[in-house]
Length: 317
Length: 161
Image (cartoon, rainbow over all chains, first blue to last red; front, side, top):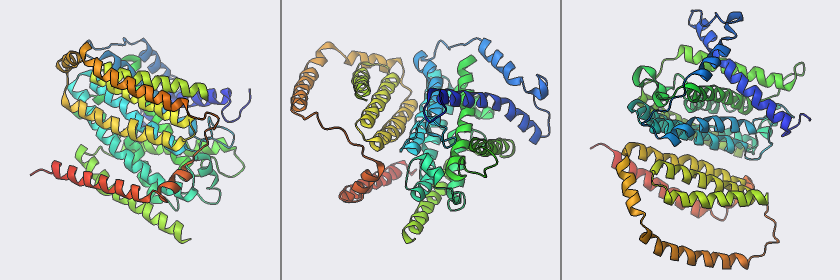
């Protein structure tokens, strides 16, 4: 058993660390939200509430897993599995350090985009099969939002890809050794950040599950572990988006030598996770039509302009 | 890799048949997605990773999502399923089966004459792009004009009077 790219031990390790991080994030997020909103948050179970996630898990596993009799059972059961599968598969191409990763693929960025677009099925099927007004409204919103923001997500990355000349995430990291892409691709970074939040439909863009308007949106009818899968997948998506931003714009594992490269990756990724949680605590949710207008009339022209300028600069140098 | 090719091919064929036989439209659409994804795997095995990813992003990830979006708004229920069932009568199978059988014979005939010794070569993103914006640039431009026309037409139809 060795720790190299694609060895079974590495794959198991990455899967385990990602899932455990995502589960721990549930507690970390509630504590951080409490801190930023000047309240206590869950602090009863374990040391400063650190075992809250264990209590939540025991509850979620022992809860009755109810499938509504009016639901389309096949789609209802498949939906949470799809989102879990696609977010975990996306980690296959993420380079954690020079010798840590699942595969070294020449189509890494495209693979992540493909998985992101397949993730839309999960929320759509979940809402559609529930046969519930609120769930249907939520999944309609999710579908429109995810299809729209996928477009800008893809275009905002093209600047980085043009600068590197490769879709390989490892090569993208290595080409940042003399300067992170956050400087030349700042606009691309901002658009990717916004689109990433919208793709993982977290606050402030959690319009598909806006609880004040439509109960819990597409997962209104879900309970037990099926709801748990939607819930954990959201956090895995958060880890994924943070890792992607780290890799694409902040030099991935690159950093001064006094810390191992994996540590640099983890520090940067956690910084973005904390930033996303802060956004949830601080930014109010926009209206649905505002989100769409903002996307198509502002982000799309801006990302196209960014690509145009980047291309012109590359050609002229 | 060869075994992967045959498994993906078999899944594609079975899923495509299931698309026709399935009377629940959402399930049929899911089979269609499975079929497209297995075709993407076939592309990948044949040495075209870029085409494979485009198949997954464009067909499975975008066009099929839009289909599902439309299905959601149509509110199809038991009525549609009964209608579908009534269309799938044994008599309706005869002519399509004959036509498909003829096509299959032709395909087998063509394949049996092919030279199997050629190993599939890897076609990277760079080569595909160089071809698209080199010899085939007119086709790309025409396709984009067509898409633009579609976009303008959709805008015109959706514009509130």
